[in-house]
Image (cartoon, rainbow, N blue to C red):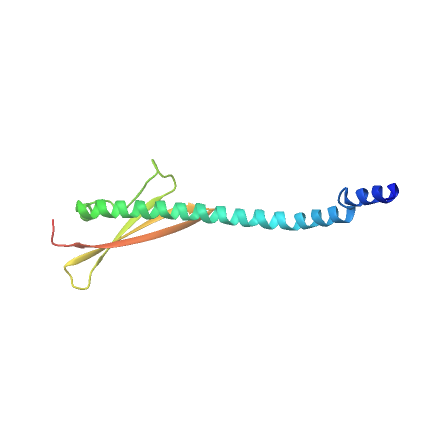
Length: 131
């Protein structure tokens, strides 16, 4: 085997060509921003789901507290959870149920997310005659 041929063979396997490196860099320049955007969107969705879950739990707890203790008849119709959950607030509405013997309690919890205010709403029926 000729030594010059052997050296040429080794040189051709030694590394990447400039065109291959450039193509890889262009590919990475396209892929990395798309992947980062996807990660950012997934992160925002996760934060939104977490805050909504907290709002639903707060609404369920407040609704249970008001209905079980009959405080819905005398309690204030709104408030906040500022001490433990800054930005979360609640409001309660009452509506007479069509049969006239029940009240529907509607509790809405609002919370901030990405510069906007979102809300969740839960409701239950309570016996109007129980004091």
